[in-house]
Length: 206
Image (cartoon, rainbow, N blue to C red; front, side):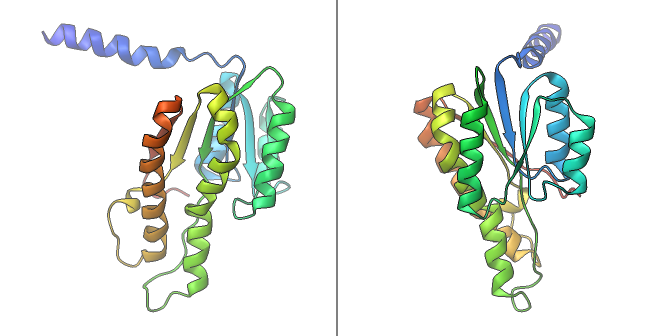
């Protein structure tokens, strides 16, 4: 019985390695450093068309991506708090996809600000909400028409701080709880349209 289960698990698991990157494009926010930067490089090596969105398109992270990746990786200047930036990114992707489909967007951009409620400025609360929650929403609003066409997926990098309250991280937790609520509602709304909504909840990472 154990052997059968192991065999079945192996077959199921191996199927995840068989996604064909041909004509698939992935857009990732927050590629200046961290998860976004690493994921952009990985998907480039796998043969995807990668749109790497960077807050600082001339910064060290973006320059390193240009140096160490193929011509299939495109840098897009993007501040997820600015609707105009998102609109420009949507137009750039539409005009450059060619035969590709937008297979996925990865909402990875995020910030952490503040300390205790008493000693945290309102501006820090707003900044966390603008990037970590409304940033996701802006990107989803902008790119959803393309994802509906491809029956693609939305990957939201959230945090376990979006489910478990953590003292002294209130601004961050507020924004991540909001992002989690958006993610869970959106998953149910988009399922009938064939668009998958996935959440990733990593630990802290530089």
